Structures are given as structure tokens and as C-alpha cells.
Image 1: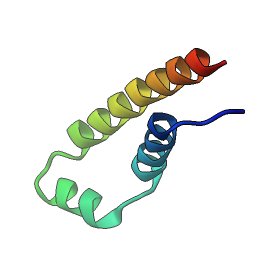
Image 2: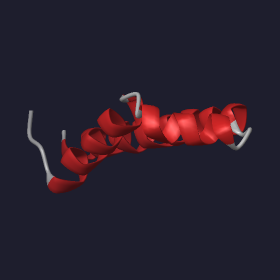
Image 3: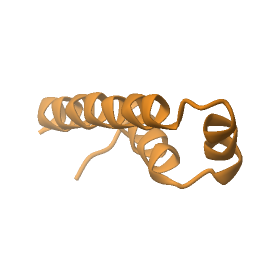
Length: 60
């Protein structure tokens, strides 16, 4: 499969969002916004996955 910089960047961002960053999650819990934080992370992952699929489709 061919790759490009945008696909690589999207894959790296998805990996980063899916990795449990305990420091950031602890801050969200401390501030009382853990559900809101997790909701935003989930929405970002969904948007990035859609963009990744679109980019992969374009280079095929």
C-alpha cells in the first residue's frame, strides 16, 4: 500500500489518542471533567479515522 505524509500523521495522531496518557487523564479527573474529556477524545478518534479512510481511498 502506498503511503503519504498525511496518512502517516493521521496514524500517529490516532496512536497517540488511543494511548492512555495517565497524566492528562488524571488532570481531567482532578478538574471533574473526565466524562467530557473522554467524549472529546472519542469524537476526535472518530473524525481522524474517517479522514484516514478518505485519504487511503484517494491514493488507491
